[in-house]
Length: 356
Ligand code: TRP
Image (cartoon, rainbow, N blue to C red; front, top):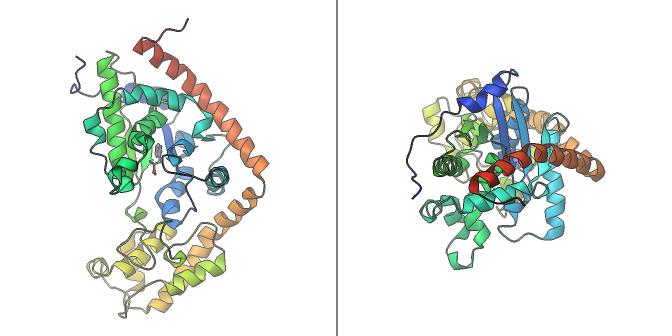
């Protein structure tokens, strides 16, 4: 019987080759092409991608195979896949130096995912909160792919032996599962150092961007009100209107962090300001303490337009040039496959698959 609870191998052996090149490791991250990108996606994930590219070797993947775990219109899926790639590039990711690609273009993800389906235990999968949320009450009608989703995510990461993954709060459990799968595979096959035990990279506190209409709910693409979110492709007028209409309360701006915490709508706007300005929230609270919301909102609008405007405009420009985006995706997939193929070959050999 394979055992499951031996200690994890230290990731150091996996870091050494990068250290020799002056790098901290290899990053893999993924974003689903399931609808319009908003400020929450940008501040929570995509903006950080460019910030990592000098210190890590980076692979940024549009996870189209994860997207179809729930129904996607095929034409929409294709254009949304390009849109996410465009967002990576518009946010400053260097698609020529690093790999920007779509998951389905690198078949090794799916091949490793099958092996991981046989490593992961039903008990582990049953604990996944994202499945419970997405499947909702009608669990019997959820796709098998939605259930297996985290094993595919583990394969996304480990097919490159990625040492680090930038994750938001909501993906921590999936990364924990990835670590469990790596450890179990290493133990079961007596290959102690084969897969690294991937480390999460968590970014600043302001990654929790809430709805502009309700500071207690996450900003979401599925909220029926477009005023609840700032989309990455919104122009300056739309950004200004949405911030003007953002929910606040009748009091002046909070003057302490404790005061802000009790006022979720104000707290959310302050957090957005701090993230966009790359400042500590406490500093922003101090700067606007006791002022009127109108004054703060005007400053937030200027800041948001200055920071997001160029990203949105570049995305729009790239979306009009699908040939270019496809060429980046193509090149990225080739780069990714060159890393993935030998790792998959090692896995297949380790598992005992014949290669006649
Ligand atoms: N599950 C992630 C999300 O919904 C997307 C994802 C898929 C991912 N594969 C990944 C994120 C690998 C990081 C690494 O946001």
